[in-house]
Length: 222
Image 1 (tube, rainbow, N blue to C red):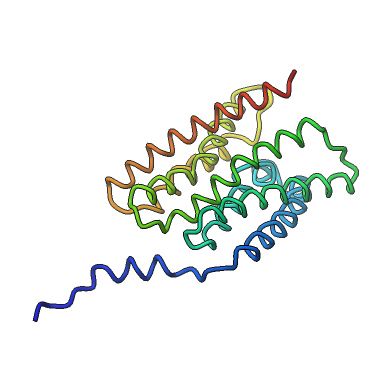
Image 2 (cartoon, one colour):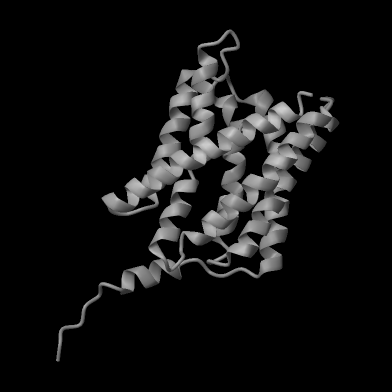
């Protein structure tokens, strides 16, 4: 009798580690968490000190909620994408509703920009969370690469702002965001080849996010 090997079992166990959640429950929870996260963001902007306040004025922290919702979808990426979109909608509504109650008027253009951005980033990050457990290695690697794109983009933006008169959150925040952006794909993949591919996807995703952000901002300047 040939010896029994355990090479496949760890992969199977890791793929089934998340307990599946009913789709409607996932979407409802994602929306509610988004609403709560949006309200906390409004308060966080006035509480957190300089530098740390970037965490409460950042798309990166918002898309994490979509990503976590996708992880709970257990490879059902269409539902994960929907939950991701709802989480971002909840964040926008929660943030601006809370800000209005606190006496901070909302700019219509800003609201529309964040809704459009969330409608794109939410499904992408939600699907990425679900596809991390996909059976195909290439799909898992691509999903891992996507996770750091917004972090890397904002890190680059913070570093650019640090050299301008505005200053922005500062160079420390910029480098921290870059480290997270690069570290996420590396942490979510195994092996030199997968990590190299994930970093290529990260670079492409960061570039695509940057181009989309530029055209979105330009469209609402007119």
